[in-house]
Image 1 (spheres, rainbow, N blue to C red):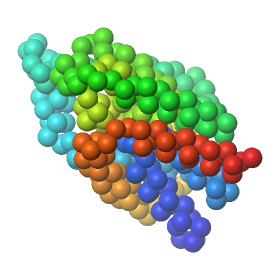
Image 2 (cartoon, rainbow, N blue to C red; image 1 turned 180 degrees about the vertical axis):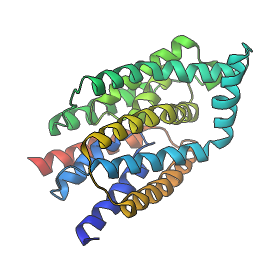
Image 3 (spheres, rainbow, N blue to C red; image 1 turned 90 degrees about the vertical axis):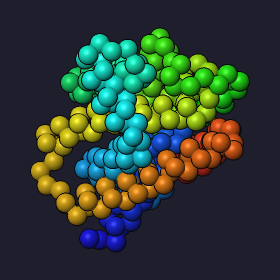
Length: 267
C-alpha cells in the first residue's frame, strides 16, 4: 500500500467518521481534503466503506433504540398498535420519504450532483446561518412529541442535504430545532434518520460500484470501515454529551471558518 494511498485512507476515514453526525458537512470536508492535498476524487469504494462504518457506529451506539423504534415499532405498526415506539418509527419513515424519493430519481435518472467548490462554500455558510437561527428556539419538546407533519418538515429539511456542503445532520437538527425540539433530542433524531438515509445512500452507491468498478482492495475497504466506525462512535458520544453544556454556535462559527479557509485555498 503506497504511502499516499495510506494517508488518503486514514484521513478519509477520520474525517468521515468525525463529521458524519456533526452539523458541519462531511462532503464539504472531503472536498476540502481533496483540494488541500490535490487529490482526484476519493474512490467510491472507500467512501462506501466509510459510510458503512458510520452506519454501523450509529446503529451500535443506539442499539437499544434501534430495537425499540425500528424493530418493536415496526411490528407494533403491523399489529395496528398505537404505541410510542410505533409512532416514532412512523415519524422516521415520514422524515425519510422526501430524500428517498429524490435519491432514487437522481440515481435512476443518472443525474450528476456537481460538487462545485463555490457551491460547497456558499452552502456551508448559508446553512450555518440557518442552524444559528434555528438554535434560538426556547421550546424543549422531545422526540415523542413530534407529529407526522413535524416529521415531514424535518424530512424536507433533510432533502437539502443533496446540496454539497449543506450537512445532513445540520439540516435535520435545524428543522427539529425550528419545531421546538431540545438540542439533544434534535441531534438524536438526526442520528436516527441517518440509519435509513445512509443505508439508502450506501445501497445506491453499491449499485453504481457494480456497474463501474472492476477491482478493489478488501484491505482498504476493511481499514476504512474499522477506522470510520471507531471515530464515528467516539464522535456520537462526544456530541451528545457536549450538547448538555453548550449551544450550537460553536459549530456555526466552525463552519464559517472552514468555508473561509476553503475559499482561500481555491482562490
